[in-house]
Length: 519
Image (cartoon, rainbow, N blue to C red; front, side, top):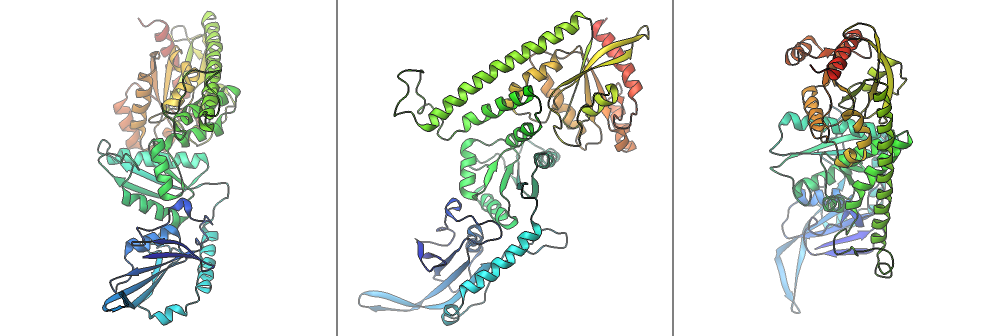
């Protein structure tokens, strides 16, 4: 049996089973933060004279118990007294948490608890638990204060699941990109947990044992957010949060958060809100056919309408209004494109993976003054500027317009593709496409394939494209030679340093000439 006792000596919970089987669910435990214990200790009984096993100690750590006391009973001295059975305590053990000690590389150590040698019952009875707990909490507080980051930052634990359909390199590139996304969103990655599975677990993505390991790691490092490297279903999020006791989000939600921070114009904010609502709607708890009351207006409201159903209806109405506004935005941009076409001004759209340097290139070519930063999705709103290039035939100056578009990313969330269709049309409706690649990124080849896959899925095929490799000042000779061999028709530049820009202008002139006269 296990008895759970608070610091006032009150028994708050009794359970039949081991500490692991009777542990208190995380959501029912007091939440004091990483510098505090839960204020509860567990007194458990066992039939074998042995110290607490790892499962019991893990349960103690997950609950951040003040202490775990194990009373081992012997069966040799049982006697019948008045029809009952009695025994005596043979050995007792006292276990409690200790602050994690770092190894030589600055990483947390593996041991997070201390277990006493066998104690007599008299020694245990004379133990001053309050004094012990106060000393432990003082140590935890000092350790936590030393590790504490900006209060505005989320303390993040990443979780990656490698399945059979991906290679080790793809998996590691995806985790590295997720860490960059979290950093861009304003979080700090404290630790990464990985698991290899043939396919994700339908209820919790990772296995049951790994969920316990993640919960323990989150407690140990003081994480307040768990981020998975894939999309999660609403039920998976609920199951994970119930078992871990920490907020859980997926990759798409991190990207949406970045977009919400980056959107500056009214059009950008409009599209971000639409993407967030479309993502949120199917994730409302209890959504399903059984809840919906078909129809609308008179006769569909009343006591039977739940608050959740009312919220769903409000979100659906807001989505409908936002979609109308996005349609109006599309029509407005279409009129601008038609005006440029009447004036016979060719257009080039700069597309590419996020953080490839599109805004930096637009600034270098046109002095556009667009915000740039070494971050993912630094700019969202498309910017169009006029650029003068030499005509490919006569050599005379000729004006074109160049548009910087939103960056792409591997497995771009469908909600974003739908919401940003007005922006992405700048790519499909342009006369030509400049596909910019960050050659200094370790996964530049994979990024090219991701962008090409997104472009191939667009309803309108973009015009002729020119491949341009950026940031050549940051790469070694072997990488440069490999890219030249694999893509001999590409142009190689450094937008930040101004290298190769004149060659790029000449190649753009040839591209525009080919787009207007493909013969």
